[in-house]
Length: 118
Image 1 (cartoon, rainbow, N blue to C red):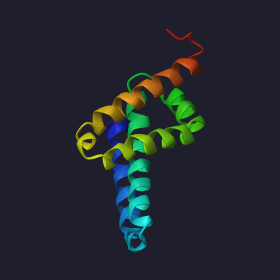
Image 2: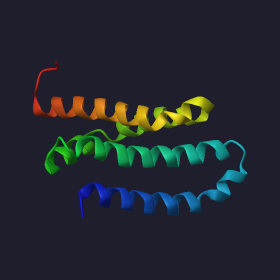
Image 3: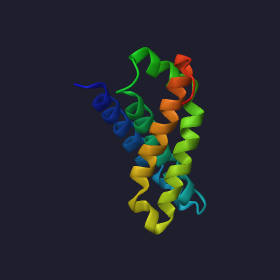
Image 4: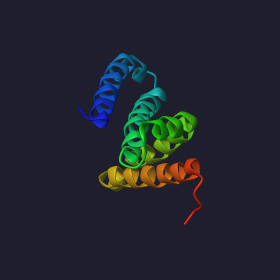
């Protein structure tokens, strides 16, 4: 089974359990927006960071790039998932997310390899 599929399955299982366990927090007014947004951002970061590197980086390079940039990936996911709150944009958010993560990941991989921008 490909690594990308394993990553997706594990992410969906963790997301589902966490999402269900935090549903009671939705009864607190501000958390009703924040908690789902954080969970969707976590899932987006987990899936997109891996998938954006899987075809271009070795397993060691992937681990190095992801390991040193977890926060940045999560912030990027927070930004792209926030677009889901804008009604017409939720239709194109998956494409925008994939493009943003691919651009960011490949730039970090280029950096890790010591290649010049260009």
